[in-house]
Structures are given as structure tokens and as C-alpha cells.
Image 1 (cartoon, one colour):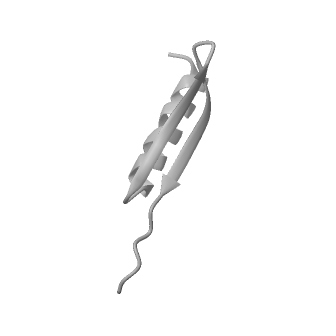
Image 2 (tube, rainbow, N blue to C red):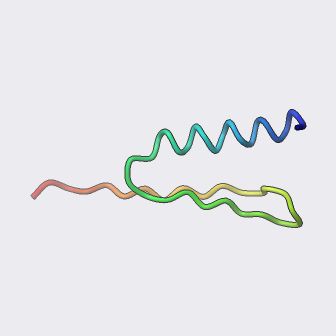
Length: 46
């Protein structure tokens, strides 16, 4: 595995650990991860 691949994996794991509610989208272009999109939901107390 290339060092660049490990950096991408570490970034994905870091984002997953940070999200409590939401989603992480991994965008792939020509077989390579090109973008990570994080959508977080924050619930407000009534």
C-alpha cells in the first residue's frame, strides 16, 4: 500500500470517529478517492 493511500485511510478513520450523527461520502474518480464529504446533523433540545 502506498503512503498516499494510508494518508487517505487515516483521514477517513479520523472523520468517522468525529461524526456523531450524519454521513461520510467518499467520492471516487477514475478509481481514486478524490473527495470526502461530511454531513453532520445537530439536534436541538426542545
